[in-house]
Every structure is written in structure tokens, then in C-alpha cells.
Image (cartoon, rainbow, N blue to C red; front, top):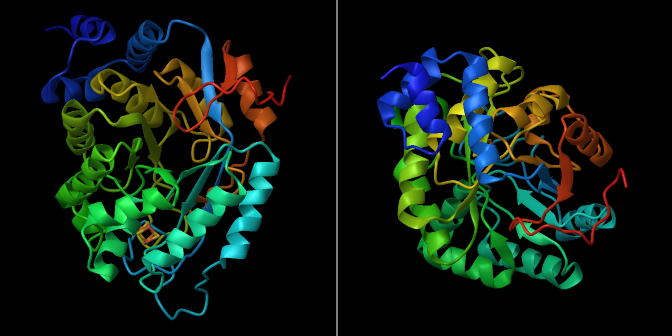
Length: 360
Ligand code: SF4
């Protein structure tokens, strides 16, 4: 099949095989790839809306026993620069975000074995009690597995207790590239690909919405990027619980692994192939945190229908060397200037007409 026919089929929702995905990734002209991804996005969401969520990321501890080589954020146990916030500190950050209209709070950190399950249950219950209007889209597969290990309890029980305490959905963090060869090099002590899938499956069985991420640009090959997409597509066929796919690229500047940063075109290529390959994941999220606002804006023509979050604070990516920051007004303006209408959403993609736009 010619590349043009392949793009045409993918743009109208035809499923790509693994080999076809690799071929499009490697050989398709970037503009034609983007046009196909945008056509598919407009077919699925024919209006001119681009959503975003007002959110914050609270990195409650940097102590971590996983030691990923791509991470500049963590400190090993007993390290002088390790920190863990008190519940009051976390709550004051939740207040700061809620006062600015946040509807989503991401509480995420290292895998700190000193923090036991009741610590999280009490924290989440307090957030739910004091800020009932914000959704806890929090922790990661690694933290859930870490809790399962220290508590000697099955993952399912950990998730049930976190959910009962108020954790409404599980972010896709920690996926990186779900291929064993890559993980052995960049995160050898982290959960294996099948464990990441297993935790997501359990969360989805419990009715928790989840997202899927991909951190690309470290050491993986083109095939391994598509293999990652394939893993996500297979689980989505089985369970259907991913609301969105969020690719972002590795920031190498201050990490032990180092290496080079992906280019803007490489980011756009990954987005476009993601939109076409993941024919069963509803939303594709653009990011401004690593590529910056201008590339984030262009991403809206490479298959994305969502601009992600305001991320009122964040430590992990900034510790790796990213210097990007954005206000709500900045995010809305790049959406408007790209020819779309910004609409605020919550964690479940409910449109929040009750929260005023910053540019209103
Ligand atoms: S990426 Fe997460 S799990 Fe890995 S070292 Fe950093 S904080 Fe720990």
C-alpha cells in the first residue's frame, strides 16, 4: 500500500498494524502525517473546542527507592536533600490551587517506603473533606506498587482503600516506554511493563478513570515507540478505561542518564502517529511543559484536542532542566490564536461552564 493510501485509511479511522505504524512514523512526510492526524481529530470532535484543566501537581516527597536514571528529582533515602511535606503543607498547596479555580489535584512523588497507606488515606480524606470541589487525580503506578510492597497487600486492596479515601482517578505516570529492554536501561528497579498494565487494569476494573503516558526520547528505537502504543491500544481494547494519551519527551539536562532532547518535529510526529494508531483512546493531550507553549500550540494541528493542565506548580520536570511556565491566560490565548475555542474541563472531561475563562 502506498503511504498516501495508508494515511487516508488511518485518517478515516482504519486500524494500523504494528508494521504500518512504524512505517508511518519513519517515512511519512511530517505535514501529511499532521494533516491525517488532524483530519481524524476533527472527525471525532468536529467542533472547534480545545479543552484544558485547571490543575496543579504537588510533589509531596522527593525520597525514592527506585532511582530511575532519567530522573533528576529524586533523592535516595537518608539523603540530606530529601524532603517530605506534612499534610498541612500539602493542604496549603491544595488551597492555593483551589483558590485559583483548580478542579484537579495531582499529588505525586517518589516511592518513599517510610510513607505508609494510612498516611495517604488521611491526606486524601482531608483533601476531600476540606476541598470537595477538587478531584484527586493522584499517585502513579510506581507509588501504588510501592505501597503494595510495604503493606504486603494486593494492589487491588491498596487501590480500593485509596479510592475510599477520595482518590478518584489514577494518572498514567511511570509508563515511560513499556518495553522491557528500555526499562532495564532507564528504570531497572521500576515496575515491569506487565505490572504497569496490571495496576491499570485493576484501577479500571474498580471504575477509576486512568490516563496513559509515554516518555520518549531517552534510548528507545522507533519500533519501541510504536510497541508502547501497541501495549496501550491492547489494554484499551480489553478494558476501555483510558480517557487520554499524553506523550511527552525526556528532558535530559540535569539527569544521570543525560543524552539529547527530542526536537519539536519529533514531538509532533509522535503526537500524529499516536492519534492515528490509538484509534480507541478518546483524547490526545498536547503539552507545553516540555516543548513550550509555541510547539504546544502547533500540536493542536497534529491530532490533539486537549491542552492538558495549567500545572500551577511542578517540580519533577523542572528539576530535570525545563524552564517553561504558563498562566491560564497564556494557555487560553494560544488556543484562541490557533483558531479554537478554549473550554475548561474536569478530570472526567465534563465541560465546566461554571468556571470562567481567564480571557473572558
Ligand atoms: S521517576 Fe519517579 S520512580 Fe523514578 S526515580 Fe524519579 S521519583 Fe522515583
